Picture: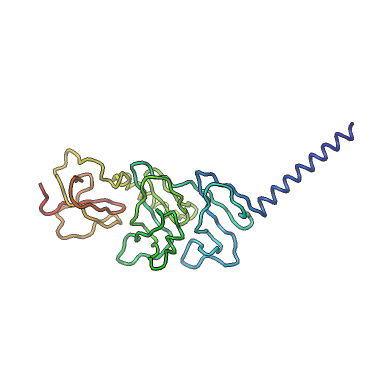
Length: 267
């Protein structure tokens, strides 16, 4: 009886050991990884026969070592051995109902001296990192820095190594890539946008306050960097909540929506 019990324990121990070895083989060699549906997986390749990311860039477009352009969506993924890659799980970007999100690109073509915002690129609302950096033939690639395009309400699968998305409640991005100075600047942008109503559907849904004496004005695009374009015909600058949106041509600056009163305001 004792010998039989010892054999059973031996078989159980051997079976458990075999299962552990199989799990280590599957996880370490086959590289089975699971990404929850509410998150994305950012692939960071430890090494590659194709070398490192080219100088001046952040994302690997040709499977070099470094952060990859393609992200993993929810589900089970194979051939992601921890000996070769690291998977950073990151939440999906959510822009709340009735609000907008602003985007800062950390890679791409540098801005021209005359630009303050990156050009609009067909990248499926910033969800196609490769399309942003390598557009189709004849099209211009995306530019690094603050983007002219905004993100409407919804849920997006964004590469957090390439884009930083600022919403009213959260800043989405790979924090390990942000320097303390970058993180401080982004936090300040978010706070200033929140104070000026910049997340509230472009700041144009609030009615003019009762104390305002302006009935209507002509909105124009002003520069970002928190200062308006110089304009000799401006009679005075006012904020967006002091002007009616009932008439007139309307476009927007990205981070500080300001409007102005023309020399001859309409009645």
